[in-house]
Amino acid sequence: MKKIALAAALVASTTASAFAGGYAAPVVEAEPVVVEKKASSSGGWVVPALLLVAVAAAIASNGDDNNNTPSTPAN
Image 1 (cartoon, rainbow, N blue to C red):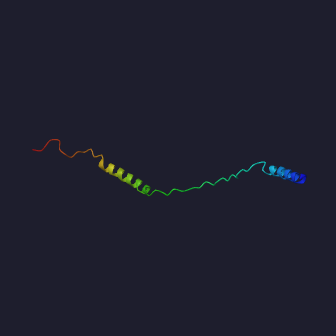
Image 2: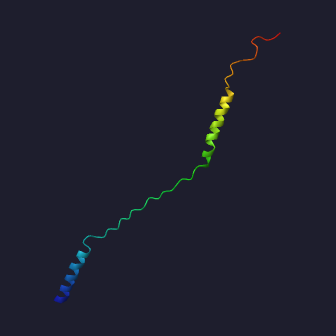
């Protein structure tokens, strides 16, 4: 009986040291995922539209100060 108790004590003392640190899950760092945005299709018409508005504004205010209408009505 003493042999069994001694064997059990020996096994119990060796297994306790095997788990001394406890279990810690390994830390795995994930690589960042880069997702490139698709270019917007509406960006292709903004600059020409602004240029068209600027040209239309320049034509509308052509700066003609000479008014060819007579100041007094003709009789």
